[in-house]
Length: 221
Image (tube, rainbow, N blue to C red; front, side, top):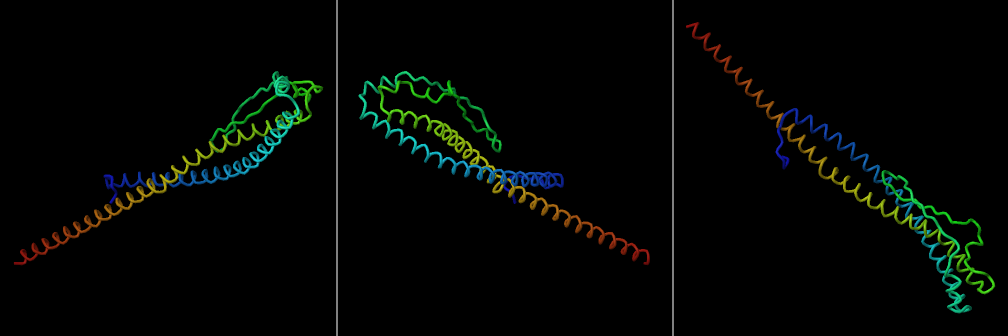
């Protein structure tokens, strides 16, 4: 018998059956959503891993170039060369919907499309290794932005997967079993009531027949 008090009527039985159909349909839809979210999440994780490897290599290359440049140039000269950047960046963000999850998309635009504007210094007083370091940082910046987008996307998808998983489990292990148990309980009670009504009718019939026989015997006397 269910833990909650259920009124064993046909109206309640119809209501529970409707709720069970809705729960099963919702369970299937949520499972499909969870599976698709998992597929999207794994794709993002694979892309994130490749981007992180590329970013780490780019930063390592830039650091190596900066280290060599620092050995070839004096610290004041390097600080002066990098003090006033020529290039500015405008960052924009919009959203992309993935299975009802709004994930961010980052885009950026530089103030000048000229490649030479990347270097905020003249070439005469600086080392070529400093040029390589600045160029490496400029290249890795795009990957770092893409990596930030991928990691935020993975975080949001993971949160949505967890919420969807809890809903699926709630339907699978609580709502659906409770509805099924309630339907069994009401069906059993209705069957018992029907059997009891049948027995009562048979007894009434027997009593009527017995009374009719007694009346006939009395008239025969």
